[in-house]
Image 1 (cartoon, one colour):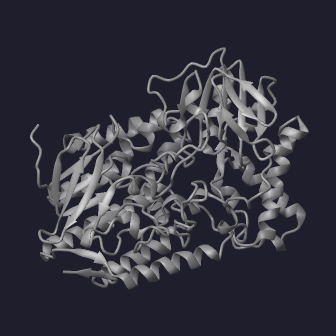
Image 2 (image 1 turned 90 degrees about the horizontal axis):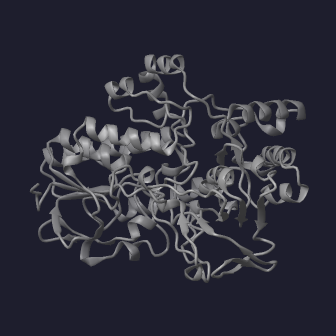
Image 3 (image 1 turned 180 degrees about the vertical axis):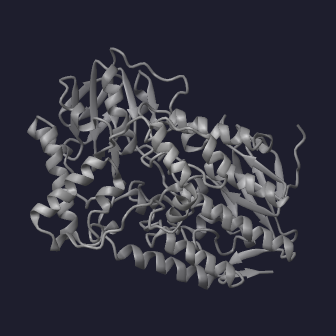
Length: 533
């Protein structure tokens, strides 16, 4: 198939953001080429195929809203969809809207350079092709670049080493094997119970205990789906204007004003619901007041102690170094119960750090554990890693890496000063990872698309944020973040999991609905804070 060397738009990434952006560009009559590093579409859900991989947002919410026909025709099978089902959904969308013909797989973008003379981006791929385009939209994902490893000796290990972020598509059979899982974030918490069902011995290496709630996953019955489909329009509209892109009653009471009996009842109810949002919505000050947060955290720690029979293991699994919710909490299916199995062992790396990997296994201060397989669930260089892995250069050759040397700066998480006609979908400075990503993706794609329509209609050559607007927005994002408990944790929200990465609270915690209103007002005011030339 012949490809345009000078399309109107280059889109980087063919996950949920890239797919919808391509669909909208088609509707505007703009030509586009979409470059995707993977051998298939789906982004996060293409790469992350580890055992137990599952979304922690319900399927009826973690889905596109732009097509009523799509909403009605697709049938989800579970409350929380597993990776294979989400990938099938993405592939269905690509087929239904004929998106594949403009997507080039196995093609990584290596550089994107702005040319002031032509007002175009020169985008070079891993195949050595250079494409020029008026606009460049980065749909690279917030959790798409695995973090670099800090474990000495890993290359010496004689057996297979698997990464949850780059899992073999054929799957892995751990039957009868001795397995080490390193990391207990979401990927580790989801995969450990499944791997334990097969492995002869499973050793879990935990650096930081995480809060996890039971998912209460279940098959979706026809009645539940029919009721949602009958009211989808109203439900979607409510989600777009909610704090997190999820519909639910907002709390007004303080945990400090409730009696112990009232708090226990509220927390018990939230625990039974199987939802991250349910616990957060028990009281209005859970994320703002450390005293209120301690009450929720103590409840969860109590539940862990009630579940795990060995007191020392239970204590190690009970988080104590960060407030609840300030690191990404998890939903699990049998995670804590797994540690009651005699062949499953926990190593607390705060007490006995990993010293090295040898040919035979993992060495800590307590000695060596011999294993057949190593599974790395060590997380991502979140929000900025994928963007900074590309050599992006704006006006006067300025590198994005230099512009972000002290942490990411942007205006609304949509654009960066000095980088004309460049857009980031769910970039740093937007609600992004603190929201239902599908709601935030659609909002960004719609905003970008309407912006491009305006530029095309009025023959505007370039658009970019002003330095002052960007500075003010970055200050606002930081100010709102500081008003919460989030800065108290060493989380990937702040880049704290990556050595040397600037400590900046990257997402916008002001709320999906409030943020949408700001973006709409900026556009209505002739793109206030942007320079149009």
